[in-house]
Image (cartoon, rainbow, N blue to C red; front, side):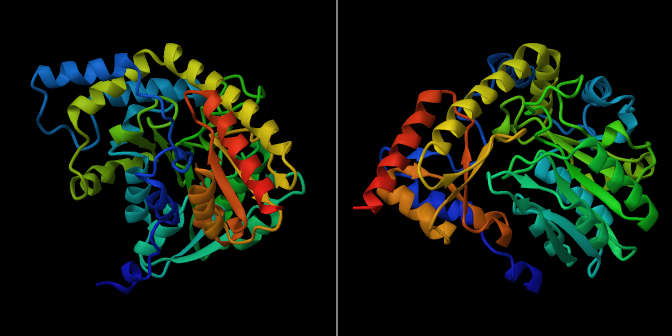
Length: 389
């Protein structure tokens, strides 16, 4: 087997989950998904598609009507985007990997802003790239910030690709418009591609954008900029298990993308795409409710955690996570396993998101029942008291 594959690390999130799965009473906050089922109107559309016999191959790039609907959706948030620039993919992670396959050769330099979902550092490693990590910086209050000058200094004409995730998983940090403008201008001078993972853009809790979405590179980029933006139906439509995403790219790249999709998945299932069409048709009923509930979950969890002695976290402006540090706990993987076994709480270890995340824990607050979050905090408080005895 290839050395790049042998050297890949397994998921430390899964490692913790494997300890807890099957244990009675464990509260699972480890994965990045809501425990609320997909809305019925979306499920009904998929069922109707199956009952109608839509069980055959589709266009590589997605159903034309779904691409048009996604173009309208994206245009409503960020300005004109043509359907010809959009590809429907089998999940957001598939879109990210497709972009890597198109853009990255073995030996290329890829800069990744960390801490970050581990797939975004693992995918370029699979392609044989040289990955350079630039870290966000933790503040005393538990928030994370970008050292923009340090990031720009790391991006040179040798840098083939810059990978950014904002709103960020796991920290909740979000790019400002000024930071995006500086990054785009710099990458234009170096010839560097930008791969922007914006799957959490609708889970945004500030009131500083007219659309209600987080700042996007699509707001400021030209169609022919070296920019790929990846999106997913998973978060804002509660469709994690459906495995459907999309990507927006320059026309020249879009003209080639169908070939690459053919050699990966051929196409996304038609009945899943029908569900996605229903999601877009009913988005004004679905997404605002989800975002309001996520905000309520965040606003219940974060102050409760902040009230615990020795616990540090901040109220993230975007995403679905609280990134938490506990005084005196440096080994996040060992701590996460102990919390499963001793407190009945399932959290993701910060080290899973890069070395810079070591000593932190990620708590997914996307719970259909806020009471479950409060119970989790109570269990953590009880465990912390037990450590002092």
